[in-house]
Length: 124
Image 1: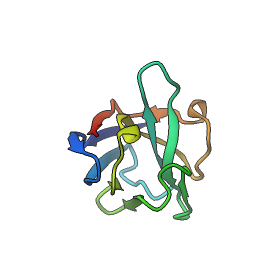
Image 2 (image 1 turned 180 degrees about the vertical axis):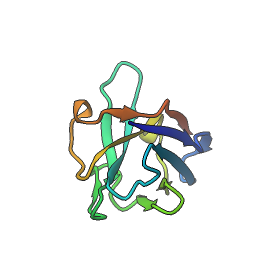
Image 3 (image 1 turned 135 degrees about the horizontal axis):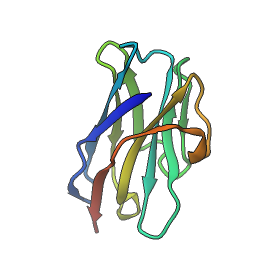
């Protein structure tokens, strides 16, 4: 089981930037074998993956954020960071960090561990 805590969400004007952080805690004390993924959920909509980085550092970005968001991980600090640049109103939503073993996948049901989320609001 992995405990995840997100932070960094806030209100920001369009064109601005912000950084989200996910702190991971495991029983073994290591995170190198985890896929760490970022999902966004808007009210009334399904949760969708926006970025992820797996245990081999393979990175995925949704087409809507490609070139604007940067995902990274630090397994010494047991964190993942989502750097959000040139944000748009459609980037608004609750951002969740999720974890699973080894390799990242698309569907939410494939991730057994989730954080509580951090809210991002981008104004036009």
